[in-house]
Amino acid sequence: MSVGQAPPRQICRWSAARVIVLANFLLIALGVVLDRVGGRAVDSALRDAGMDSVLALSLQLWLASSTLLATAFFAWSLRSRREGGPEGLRARRSLVIDGALVLMWWVTVLSACVYGHILGLAA
Image 1 (cartoon, rainbow, N blue to C red):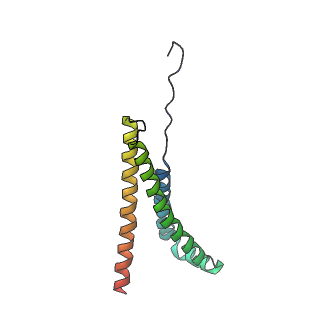
Image 2 (cartoon, rainbow, N blue to C red):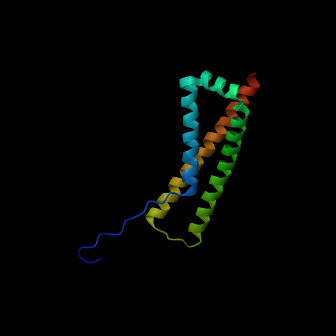
Image 3 (spheres, helix red, strand yellow):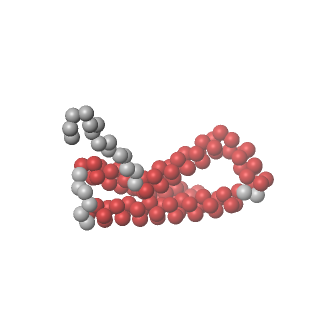
């Protein structure tokens, strides 16, 4: 680099797995906030419009498919980095962050399934 040139910018690369998992956490947080703020009003408005079953089905499909898709993207990035991709500290750190987010999402999904099962047994 000569005098007067700016250093090359490092671009923050977000992996597809990270974006999907963070979108899922945001979706869950939005659902919790909407339930706390105006749960009955939102539920009745959706039911009156006939959108409650459509929304429930689309949410279930999105959460199931995005979980599998994020896991597949993480496995693909793990495999591509092991096969000879650039091995730098930044690449390993990104892989660790993605792995931690995917693992936290799977723990959240499985915890919700166990909670739903326990609620079903109690009824």
